[in-house]
Image 1 (tube, helix red, strand yellow):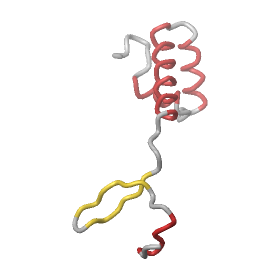
Image 2: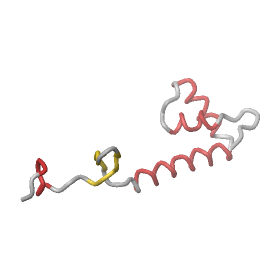
Image 3: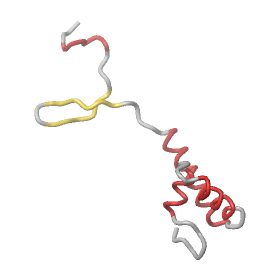
Image 4: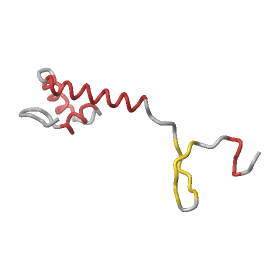
Length: 86
């Protein structure tokens, strides 16, 4: 979304959603959102994207070194502690 005259930038909208604006800038943004449907929609869309990311986060992964390559793998089960077979 390209900011139109008087509209905040995408970065400002992201900072608003992520609560990174100063109190004065946040108040100015909230006043703008009262009158701008486009920016209100951009804020709602950004919140929705964050919700999707939180819901669809992959399981925790750890990096495992295999030879000279590093790969992502799920955590190993406890049956192979310290590299010994049970």
